[in-house]
Length: 255
Image 1 (cartoon, rainbow, N blue to C red):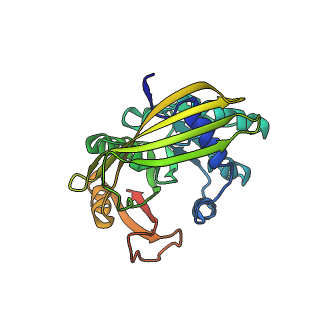
Image 2: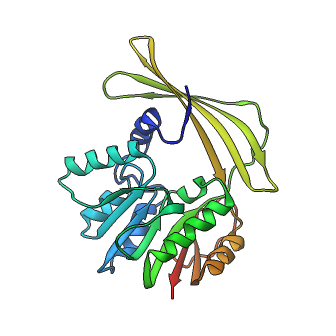
């Protein structure tokens, strides 16, 4: 068994727990509202299996997607086909992003930007995103702060997921690295698929999370070249953040 990022079993759990159009705290509605006046192309980076891009496409917007996981993209394509949707889906990590188009807006919902583990890689990703935005275009993404658990070595419990075909996937998590000073955590996730009481498939995932202070990330965006950075709390545009349990939505302009 080798470690994966978003492999087959992880994607099955993701599809089950993050259904198409499922809104977390109003995020789908927020992105749809902030993008409703876009006439050009939009890119959803770290698109996953389509939770957000599909309702955006169904609302009439022109949205492409990019993700580094072939399993996630395969699931997204299948969901497109089920709904007779057509759009461009690209396989790439953001640090090496090189697409044929520039976009009126690029979005990264779901706090997914925090999954870029190395700080240098996250800065390179922002530079590539900046390059792919048209002058005057926008970057919109949301972030969050981690929980207060920094005790390594303990299991975080087991979750059980019942699949439509009767199979069961169990997931165990274990925090193996936590560095408050350098602002990252790493957990190991173990997925096991069971059929009729027999174990038929196992997958290990290394799950890293790197977070940023509220003002820190605003300064990061400005250092890349973005301007007019607005930080909003809990998917209410212009609402100032007040505590660490909120979601923080950044909207920034490429000049």
